[in-house]
Length: 68
Image (cartoon, rainbow, N blue to C red; front, side, top):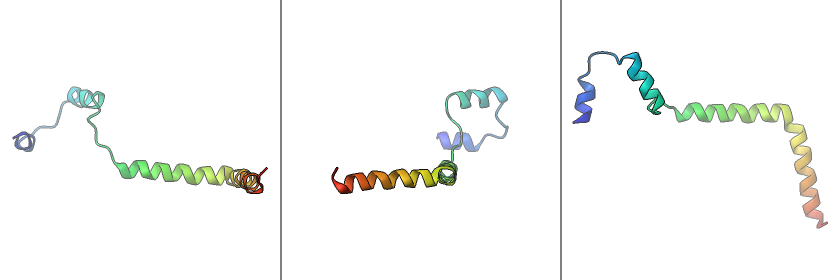
């Protein structure tokens, strides 16, 4: 019944209705967009700090592999 009601609407929502829907969190959301942002953040992290990260990781692995 609710689907039929939404399909029969012929006018665009008012700005107030859109604002209220946004405040209530009823907005379109793409999980692909979030995945793309995370991928971009990871690439930027490794571009900026990759060498330092790998050097630190290598030191940690050496420490634990020697049993010190």
